[in-house]
Image (cartoon, rainbow, N blue to C red):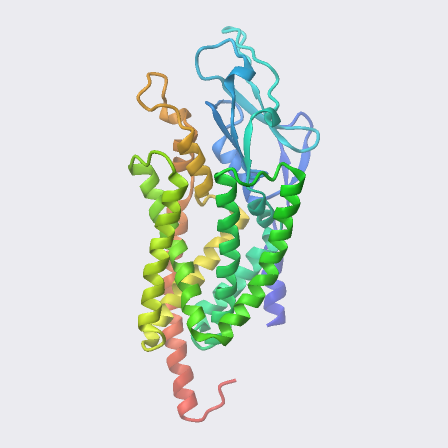
Length: 369
């Protein structure tokens, strides 16, 4: 087992650095999923930004005041992004001599910004979180039901961590928390630490109290389905105001349905429990992969991009230049969905098969260790 741990840990050290070719001087920047997403969404030579901008590196969403930029063009301005000397992301107008387009230097701090610092902290220690989620996820895909109590402990602890993440995201989206202020940033760091410690304590509590685990697992499944449904709801319906409230209602509704089914089935039907364990374990793996490589839609960015979206009926509106449609178009949700279905089938098969073998050996009083 120790050799396997070392092997899996080394996997996350294969791609540690990336050269920033868009900087004036080549700069070594630690690879993260946010840097990879930055290159995906914003092309270096031909980026059009209209009112909104996302810094994936620090999980910041900007509502730009175009009047402060004071450009000399009536059309959407083309931008190029670059890293400052402090390795912070910034944007500048792409000058076109023929059209004589010029604008002021852009200082992003002068514009309205939403900083998801809790998610930034997750990305900052992403290797550790990913390692734990993927390693345990693979283990539970094969023997999750056999080590039932350990499975319950781990994913109920994950439920608590996800709850803290959801809470901090909602506070930022509704502007109740601004982590660009030092006190708010300290508060977020403290909450991040508390979330880790409390997750361990909460996982142990679920280990002791049987019915509490059904509540927790229902929340995890509700978050999985709720976010997936809302990804399509936000695209194909006119949500109007209070989009974040509608996400909250969607997630709560899904969580309630799954909690009820957990209380109804409990542990009466082992095969159903194995399937559900496989679904949750697969989500853990997908979440771990997303922390490393990105590409899975970040719902708070979609909500803000939708809220500040330009009028689609206007003549100047162009889907190709609109941030919301870029976020919808340039992600890997179907790749992750394919992996999710694949891992779930693998988990269902091996959990059911390995549990049968385990029980047969136990009946025959053959050593199972």
